[in-house]
Length: 275
Image (cartoon, rainbow, N blue to C red; front, top):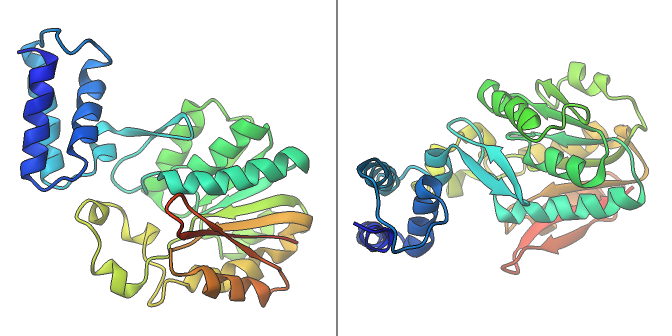
């Protein structure tokens, strides 16, 4: 069997399972196992079996990113797996906002609810600025540490394990010390948690569920960290597609003048403000 024949077989398997991205995912599975080789090249038995094994796992609902054990974000590679939120393209918008700000007003920044570390690591690599990355989950924190090493930013990232709302964590960050505060907190509401796609259910609930209305973290984060942000510093958070107005109001209550940034699909995705 040659690569092109395997590709058709995997595409059909995925299509039969109801996968709408069957062509993209088939291509990614083959690239993960075989690399970018010409489609008329023959396969080894080991390569074939590994590709079909990955396809079977995907058909059962496991996220492609978990199957591979890593995923690309903003052009950088990150380890991912059970217990950590999968980096998504929409989150790159948060990074872009922070990179733009820190290149003009450089200095230390924070990544709260850091997860895999994709936000803090990406912004640190792009700007050369130091970051404090805070994550409470034991599993996610292990990925954060591994990704810091993978991306060779040990000199830029300080990983802190703990609850972002604990006094112990908050006191570690001096007042008026941060040039930006970034966060992609849990924001899925109770209703949407019940309707999650099968592959999303593999991801940790603690990284997804933001309370009955999805706003629990936003109600606390602006007040808790306001004193940590310098004047003219950036406060930017990722949000759910229907949360723009609600999160903006919470930010306004803390004295900010926020803007809503839409994602590639025209949906509300980031709320950001300059102090």
